[in-house]
Length: 424
Ligand code: HEM
Image 1 (cartoon, rainbow, N blue to C red):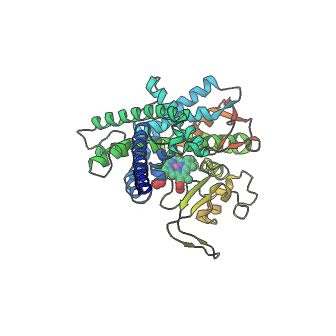
Image 2: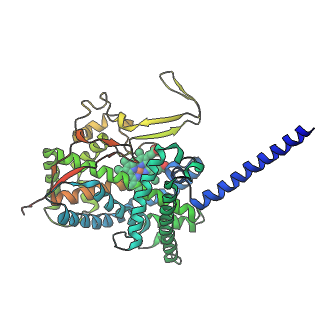
């Protein structure tokens, strides 16, 4: 009898202990913010089914042709600042272009996603820039370290406290911007406004038309853009500049195209100019084949999938799709290591399976920002090439790639910029 009573008390105590632990754990998590992995799980590219469908529909209007056209001015202005920086700080000696390009793509995404210029020297902006960079690094540390994915062990590390501080900076900054933008548009129907719209404004507008998104939801999506639309584009621009610096003939052909379009003037690029950069387009495509910013994507099977080969992928299986390896398949791309923009001639593209080239993925969950990305990459790369000739320092063979959010070489990419003397 005594054993039964003691056993019963022990079981009740254990249940109470587990419940209390769960309660404290939830309270602590809320206070501290989620682990980096949970943080990223809440945003569009990692959200499951129904919530994703609703958010994707809402965000699609932000990437409408007319909205994208409005971003061209920002891309041009930021590129002008970048060229000025290269002009004063970076000519004559090799520099690692990753941090430089990364800073300016962040300016672009901040202005187009949040309607906020980070180019100012304001302390808050600078702190925000640092927090975005540092949180990206913490996410990678987390992916590589199982103990950082489990809250009770994560909370014991210094990474937890650093992340907590960084998230506070990030959330205060974006929260403040969201409130300011909401006030600014309080009495107008922003979608009909003549003002240039940021992606954030589309979300505020959706909220006002009673769509199911609260302030936290808006902040989650703004965070998505800040992370998805920054590192990916930086990697693409840096590898494009690398490949151009390594291939003098290809560089000459791009310069010919740009000099023809701009007649060697200083004017900003228009939407039509960007459409006319057909050779640069092929060079960017070939760069994204050899060096895709996103090297692999994952899906989970919701049902058994019968493959034509006879294999069955069981329900609940995680399927990794290796974009990098697909793009190196010699059956699709003979001599795959060769950099050859002509693989993207109209004729060659027509003769290839549409799923043989997937830098932006495919299907309903493909990259929502791909048109945005190509416009931005073209404006930055063409602005640089109109002013500088690129001299090869690093080559693809001597770079050691690392596991990061996107494809990245461990020691960055070094290039030498030589001022062009354009004859009029
Ligand atoms: C060269 C630049 C870029 C590359 C290579 C790229 C690549 C990708 C890929 C491969 C995916 C699919 C991930 C998956 O299937 O799991 C994706 C998704 C996504 N991308 Fe991009 N991206 C780029 C630029 C951008 C930009 C500039 C933005 C926003 C301004 C953006 C926003 C997104 C979003 C929101 C998703 C999630 C879409 C969804 O789940 O519905 N991306 N991107």
